[in-house]
Length: 256
Ligand code: BG6
Image 1: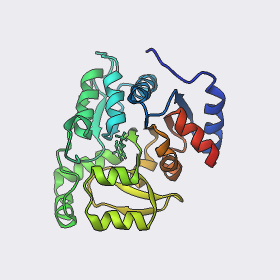
Image 2 (image 1 turned 90 degrees about the horizontal axis):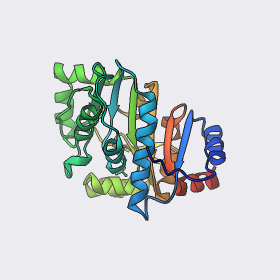
Image 3 (image 1 turned 45 degrees about the horizontal axis):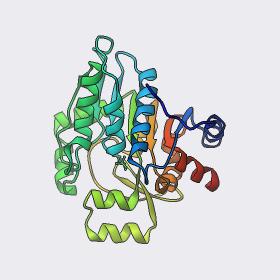
Image 4 (image 1 turned 90 degrees about the vertical axis):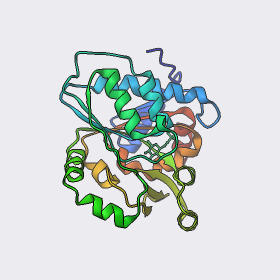
């Protein structure tokens, strides 16, 4: 893949690996907040990293998001080697643009690599009482169990307020997030700069607690606005793989 990584980035990559306790950091050139091209680079870098980690028989959970969708777009088509690999969406769907939803990216990724997939066709924004009820369903229990046993999680990390708006959170939630100074969103949980969960919407699927137990973790985030989001969710990335852009990397190193 024509990877446009940042020249001379390896020192910064190593520094971040050391300071954040991450297995491997890849930094691509630019700032995704200002330049859409950077998302493509993030996608390519993530596809290439994932390519190196793929093995048949793995089970992989994946979230949605625009950056993850780019990764799937740049995943080269390959067939034959991953017939027993299983791709699953980490959570239900947010609504809105289908191409960025976890279900869609899971199917697309599975098709690209010739793997199996299992869908999770639940809306990600049901009321707590409906969720409690649905959770009792044996088929849902089965999916949840599979998600906790998964070998790899590929996930995006978002800025709290941006994700709250994308998810159409009600105004009282938005106010709560503002007053609690939420900076990050991952797995439908919102975090403050210290990494405390300040709000979590009831939903079914991989939670931060489940994600931490998954052996292979691959996170992707770009745009300097996500630097504090990344630091707030560093526990999720510890021991895993991280793909970021130059602007996030520079901001993080300043804050560390
Ligand atoms: C999604 C995750 O994959 O990506 C969210 O489910 C995350 O938790 C979001 O916040 C980030 O989206 P984007 O579009 O900025 O890559």
